[in-house]
Image 1 (cartoon, rainbow, N blue to C red):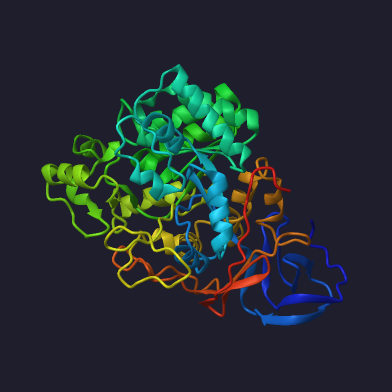
Image 2 (cartoon, helix red, strand yellow):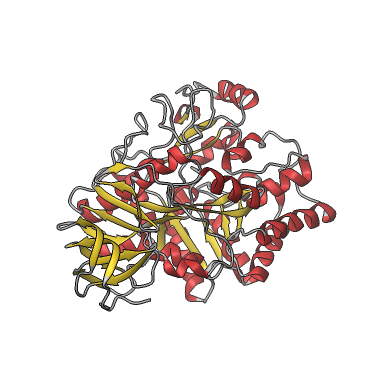
Length: 498
């Protein structure tokens, strides 16, 4: 691929007059971009005849954003992600219990953006140790967290079966192994190293939710990150640390120093972050037991149950909720985004060297906890975390326009090229994404750099981002003139694809 202007006589779509930014080549210039058959066929040069032309003067044209960490694997939620500039949304941290079935379901229903899955370590454990046989993504995982066995250490026979399940999923197209070790912290380091060694043998990353997130020893956030680094050193695997902001919290500087040192020594450790101070997960996870909250610097009232809006008044009420509805989604307010000191922690995570932007998007659910599925609009009472709809525009607004902490070229690299590069060994086809070059996939975003912004809040999570004029997936507009279309052109991202 390259961005040299070649003579093209005709194309399906021509984007004219835009400021084209390609972080890999350093291109930052007003040129036309021509698209045919889902690929970029010209960047600059004489304008070809076009069946359709978009005048994008005064706008930025760049590669579509690649979200490595999206649990929002259904049409309504993914459409809101598309309105935030996302053209590829992958379920890699939690993964899928049955990758082949998940890919088949997505293909059958259609997706507005590209999709793909890792092999789920947690769901493999649920299958082996609880017999629950989960198939899907994150919410299938949350439904199984109340199982009695999956969080305990495995014996040799059980571990062999867990590894076997993961190998089956890699053969089915999983682009790595998702390891929610923070949800089962008593499972032991030997198993984690075995999983990392499996990933190394197959040339795929692991995507880890670190074991600990506390600020002080023992079992500190630094210790959790150090385990990831140690696994990289011991196995040779590419280890990806998920949402470094929410697992590091107030230890972000120490974690950054650890990871920088590991990279200087040649270890392949990559990171991602999102620009919010609150996390979201199931209320029954181990680290939200009332006995653990003080070590996280929070109390029961810092939790908000998504379905009801309730903030538990005390430990007794939290214990009751965890017992009755362990899979209920909850927003965890770790850091106060209105406090300068806490906001600085969020920004320092985003500014860590070579840290990709990833949303940790959660699918929208109704007040009864049911995921909103199907090709339809969201009901007005459906709720989620604002990061599902606003992560990438919030990142651009805060880190580029408002603070000037990153130049636009570097910010866009963290949204597109960097995540594509993280996946390229496992999926060589990702070398065609994250770029605006001849031969690249026509996954493109067109936005107003002066206006791009998030509107979603914890009280109004459905509010879509603004400033995105067009979002193309395989050359088809999924967002046109700022509005979502009905197109479902998303394609699978699978291991080994070229």
